[in-house]
Length: 222
Image: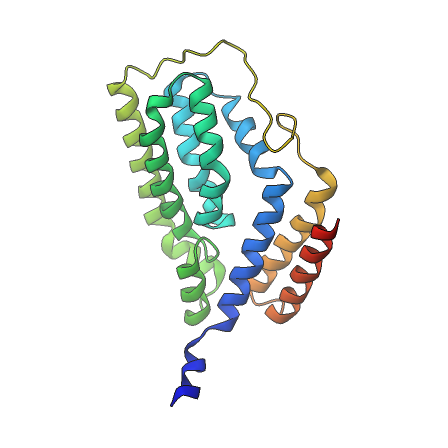
């Protein structure tokens, strides 16, 4: 019967996914991801090192902020960095590897991607049990990503940087390099913590959904 199809919809997973995506959008607007990216790249001194950092950034970030969000947050930043350093011809390789990395890294945690969130909810597994199951695959994936970037860098003679030394990365979205909107971060960081509690089944999803919607509406009005 048609009414029976409603039972196929996992409203808990959809609610969690909405809350996580809304929270990540709020953190992105506050400049958190841009600042994290700048902090990482500022510590790298070779073209190969920069590409490595840009590839591993979504690999790690996707474990907490989902694969889609990590790519939306970091791919534009990566293209900007590569262009500034005079190695824009490495953009295609870097973006492809970032996409692969985001999908591989996201498999480690229950909140890494929508599929994991559904499987975690349906299986009844604990969060640590889920991570322990996926950890060997994530470690092998990380090793393969590093090997691919090193091989590409060796083929390109280390990807020599042609930009002026010490040149600062420009601000994005009106932010000063490395700075975040502190007041805007706090509520979204709190919502992320609440989302993790909901994933761990310590907080009802309807309650989390109501809080996220209220904060999002208040933030837009502000």
